[in-house]
Every structure is written in C-alpha cells, then in structure tokens.
Image (cartoon, rainbow, N blue to C red; front, side, top):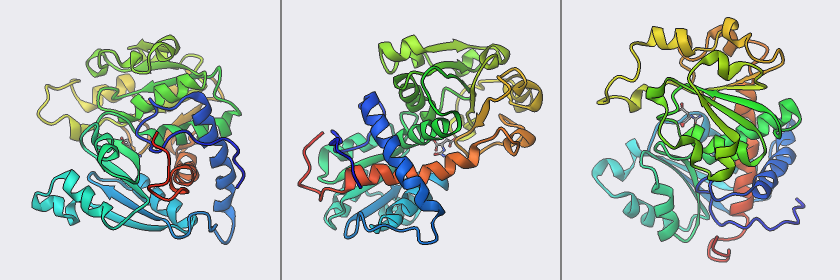
Length: 326
Ligand code: NCD
C-alpha cells in the first residue's frame, strides 16, 4: 500500500484536529480499500498480528460491525466488548476497564461512550491508538469521513456543493463532526431545525472556516432549495427523556421537517439523500424516499467499512509504543 505522506496523528478523537490534507489522505486511502469489498476474497495481510478492541458502551449496529469487519479484512484480530456484558455493569470505571484491556496489549481501542470526551481521556492514559466511534453529543469522526467519501463518489467532489443537514441538531454528534469535515473540504452547509433544536454556537465549533461555510435556517424549503446533498438526522428520542419537549409532537415535526417526495422536490433534481442510520421511518424520512433512487443510505454503510479500514491502517500499522505522539 503506497502512501508517501506520514499521517501526523496517533489517535482519531474528532474531526477538529484534522486539516483538509489529513481528511483527503483518509478518503484517498478509503478509495483503494473500497474495491476490496467486491472481491471474492475480502482480505489483505496489512494488519496481521495487530489487535483491535471495539469497546462499545452504547448501542450500535453499523459502526461496531463495520469496525469489526474492517479490522478482519486487514487480518487484524478484533475483539468486541459491549457495556452490558462487561465489568462496567459491575461498577468498574471506564479508566479501570481501559487500563485492564491495555494490559492485554491491544494496538487500537475503538471506543463508543455516552460521555463527550471519553476517548480523549483514554488517549491521555493509554499507550495504544484510540479511535472515537461516537462520544455523547460531541463527535463521530468516522461517520463524517464516510459521509464525505459517499458524497465524493456520488458527486465527484465535495468542494462547492450545497449540503443541507436537517433534523435533531441538538443531540447529534454526527452534525458536529460533519460540519467541520465538510467545511474543511470546501462545501457550503445549511443547518435546518426548529430553534428549539439548534444549539447555540453550533455553526462556530470548527472556528472561522466553519462559521464562513455554515448558515442556520429554520424553514425546510429554504434549506433544501438548490441543495446538492440532503442529509437527514435522526430524532434522538433517547437523549430527550427528562428534557422539556422540543417540539409539540412527532407528527407535527415530520410534517414541518420531514423529507418526503414532496419536500425533496425543493432540492436540485439530482440531489442525493443521506442518513447516518438508524432511520425513524416516517418521522425524519419517508419510506419511499429512504428506499428511493436518490437515497445513498446503504452506500454510506458500504463506505463505512472502507473508511474504517483506512483509519485502522493509518493508526494501527505502527506497533503501539513506537508511534510518535500526535
Ligand atoms: C449515529 C450515532 O450513533 O451517532 N448513528 C451511527 O453511528 N450510524 C446517529 C444516530 O444514532 O442517529
């Protein structure tokens, strides 16, 4: 595998510490791994002898499975741990769990956790590479990277595209990683939700570059008009319990902010439809649009494996302890 540029990071904690060149390096590498999925023998020896631990404290189908498949396609040994079956259920702290796993000498720990900053904590205390697979409402960097890879394949570029991101902006780590990734790649972003689901400062989290690229609108027609890409976000009901209601009821939310054949007509005729999954069918996305010809939802899942292979390759190739600190 030729990649002349040395990836300058030891961990993938968020998009916030990546610049455009880092992102493009990951996406270019993902392109070379993507084709492997179409081969009858889907395996290369690149990470033979390396150990990857997937440590998941929140539910996951796509992310956990694709990290496991990505590791196995590169011949690494992948071990999966979920909170319900782990000693966390007995009251062990995250750091104790992680220190004990480190004693078994993994090269990479992939962490999903309900608290923002959990992967950063592990990166401070552990010797191996840490990959953030979603930390609370903070970041989900591999999701943003696979979204960018999907857009690049469907549209040939990301630069100059108009991307509408619609839905539950308040509770979404996907949007926080995506606006930084897309802005650094030169896209223009419209964020759309009722004001009750727009967190203050959302358009500024990536600094000046994000601020310049991003616009917040509360009307769906304004968000979709002329859009090349429509990315819908799940209404994250599990994060709303104990909160004041953010909208009157699901039916009204869906009528005002849902993507249907009628509202998709506001976007460009060749606009693609994205969703990180899992989809609340009939809430943020109508079933005929989710399954329709403009939907690239399953392409996103396919790219998820290739992008995670690229990230594991860049971070897991050097044995733990020998890499330079990021
Ligand atoms: C997202 C997540 O977990 O943040 N899903 C995913 O990783 N595919 C978005 C969501 O749960 O809505």
